[in-house]
Image 1 (cartoon, rainbow, N blue to C red):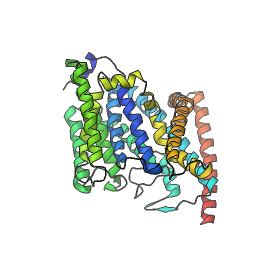
Image 2: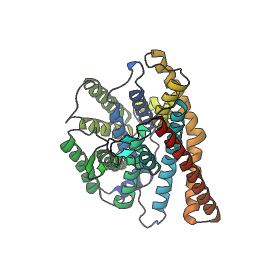
Image 3: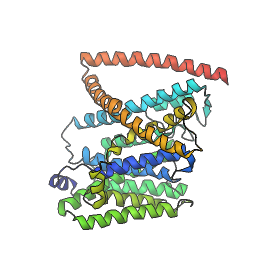
Image 4: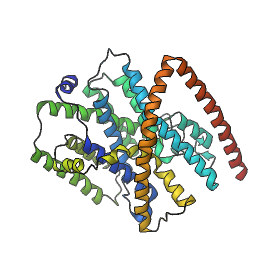
Length: 395
């Protein structure tokens, strides 16, 4: 499959429907974690696999197709964009959680499996939470394990497999899922060592991400040969979404050991189908601008835990036993996520990209930024050790 030729033949679209589903999946994960009034999908953790697959699909489209092997600035551009995209909000939420702990007087268990709270914080700073260094995979921000594994899966792909062929990448995806199912009986595992210290969550991420890159190759091949018609795509969209909903409903109270790989198949089918953005459901998403929820899906995913804790423990306006709290939490979560996306996430990403560029060029501005980072790190460590000292005194 000549991916480069296929990429050159097609226009560069924007995937409105996939953005819509990314936002909806982030909400499902949030509802599962907070569990207000029992309104949640118990199997929503499989949405994380959807994120991994979609990440591979989008990054293959955005950065790796077409690939320009002679462009030496490519890897620098990719790394700076990924760091700037993921890191600022990740760190901001991390410190917000620590502040919330101090406010309510929460005393975290200092020993967690093979790790400790200071060690878990250090892992979060270097984006290695979820990689298997701490048994049990319990990062300070529980949602962030997948952010760490996805970041390093991105780096692994960009550094080693960017120019590898279709069959090498699909073999890596297949072997990753095969190992998980064969050794654990399920793909829904995150915090246990699989290969020495490498976690099952990282293998899960690699499987999904590499599979996503393959899906984009398939999409580019189909798009270069044939553009499906409205009626055909509308039928396919309804069929793929209905199949996914029915499977989720039928298995809602079922142990999925051995068959949860069906979610991967259904996710792949939906991504390929909705990537054309030409069916009746896609028209609905674009017409009513539902895809906007996808813009701030990362904010939804990262802040929902700490926002829930603040609303429940500090402001005291959320009660998990009240139905009205579900709708109130949804409104506040959507508003807060949109605000954070436009006021912090986008500006911070742009600022970080510029900073990384200045640092790598080691300009005078870059030197100033390095000194500022060192000063911030020292101040942060000082306050962190004060926090740990106080927490030890409370235990």
